[in-house]
Length: 98
Image (cartoon, rainbow, N blue to C red; front, side, top):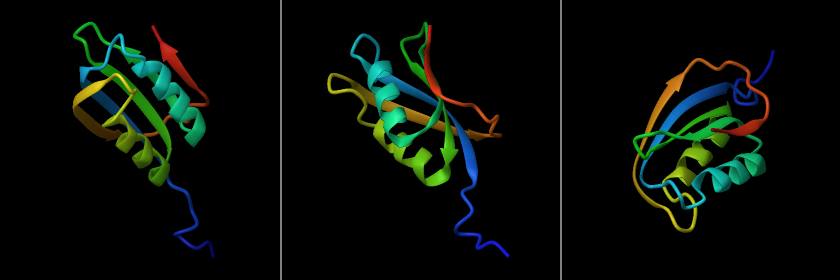
């Protein structure tokens, strides 16, 4: 029988970040951080000035990524991060969407 704590449950989050998050390298640094954490998903700018991202991975790692989003890139000024947990889709890799 497998120990439940050793089972890495995969989660998926839909994240919206608002503030001064466009034109400050936010997507670049998000991609870099996601790569370091081995998070799957994507990030993109929205027409309303927010950044949208999908993160998939084990819960603990995804939560680290979400915590990072509150700081973001060195020039970013993050005002709000909203997070919604949704059903994982099994994404592979991480990309910037345009």
